[in-house]
Length: 119
Image (cartoon, rainbow, N blue to C red; front, side, top):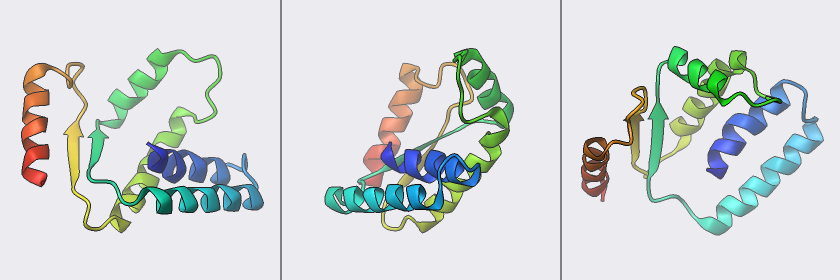
């Protein structure tokens, strides 16, 4: 999760001017230190859904304050794609999260099979 937080939200907040260069550099150093202590992940699950589905779910959250706006979703997706292009030797499994029941037992059983084949 921390990877997503840094590679999507922290980069977005820096791009939008919510974090100065110095604040972003501090976040990057902290992320680098923590990432080095933890070692590489065993597996990355990437949830995917069409932008209209993500926008609808984003709107349903109904949070009174959203720093990241719906218009930022495309930019954040690009940040995640850029980061995943740098990940090597770690299996990445894309999970189609477009359906409301993407956590249904049959879907999870299929995902478990994919995870088992990755190791």
